[in-house]
Length: 599
Image 1 (tube, rainbow, N blue to C red):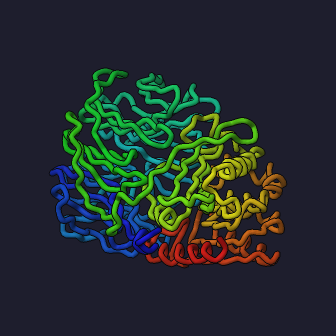
Image 2: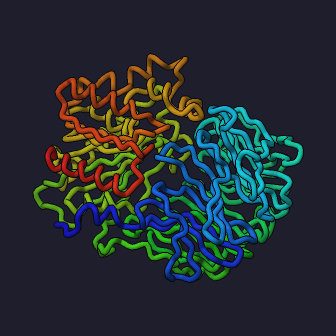
Image 3: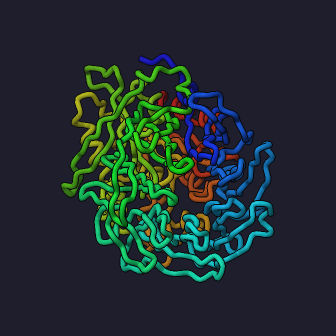
């Protein structure tokens, strides 16, 4: 049924995170060495030059305007305390921030390339301030221009470099935008509102008097809008059924790109602003895979680079001619010798949950399905919960399919991509309704003629790990095994120990320690672990700042105490997820052996 081992599938490469220099050179991240590093390329499908050589993954790269140097970000061991580094034309690297105990969130280059902005929690772990720093000094000399009292991030410089757009997040579904005067430090509130409203992907307009963004103000769906500096909001493009979930604007030319999220696939629009709320569209580029994003404009926006992926297409970078839509693949991240035609595309399905609501899912069957209904299934649950399982490439998923497993990926209530109301259906006291959706999904699988009802596995990471543990405690008879990756076992200990900068945002989703402690205890899988009967694999990173490793240690010990077969694997050099290829190979080789034994 399969020809290639797990290591081969986990060696499928990805190229992503593009930036284009003033002379047209493409910089990007590629994981050829096992973790994403900085590479540059001058010609399509040419031989790229590796520019960084670290054991840790690089988080982003951004070329300086008018200069052959770039900034990149990198943390240590998955601790998410990213530092900013400058890489010059001679491959000399300078640590620009040099505050290893603080997080640094990139805010973009000033247009002359002599300075940049960022947000950091140097002053207090729980809050972020805004800094501006000259390119030729280290972090000790960064200028603090605004002291925040919450979760701030910087969205870029105005065309005349006098202002920064600053976002403040209160939860994943509630933000505010401000214009920050760089000279005076005065902050202008642009988005006073009531209730939960998202204002995302804000980009300065060419005139510097407005921003283009996506928002759900007054709507259940995200739409493209123009926000004036006087606070007026004007709709530019909307879709009553699907979200417009991203926008990239070149504020020198007014050329714009945005995408429509249709059941997890996206439809890209490229155009040019011809008025405050009017866009002349250019031809749509013909791209493989069904998912494309991360637009990076080139000089004069004559072309742009973007990442392209799909469930049967590993991630690579394409460069598109803006006016014609002509697209050309630039990077050659390989499929590790596995023929692309062996990869399996999912089907979008829907199943009815306990309250009559339809829940969307991606369902993939292996190429050779037994006729006797003997196919085991992995129910793979995304994290977040403010996220969406989309059909991007996943080597592990393709490996399971090659081994004869079906894969079922539900977007249970609380997922993004299906409107604001849908995302709130699992808030606080409604948390376990999303677990009921899993039960309904398994009922759907039981009715499928290919599925073996007795060989269904729950697997998920982060919040998906909680869903695995909750499913095993709430519906123990449904599962042949569970795989919990960096999951939450107890909401109280999770909230008490998560990074201080995250606690308030997470309480907005899950409930507060002060007001909801008893409820949080009642739904925590740790306190119901005596109901687990399925064998359990627990996987975690020791440096995880989001879901501390104590969550894994607690649930593994408690399940073992009740006689459950438990395997645990904790990596000392990982954080919230397993990012290094050698660790992924070890981790998922162990998971596969565990499933071979129990499923």
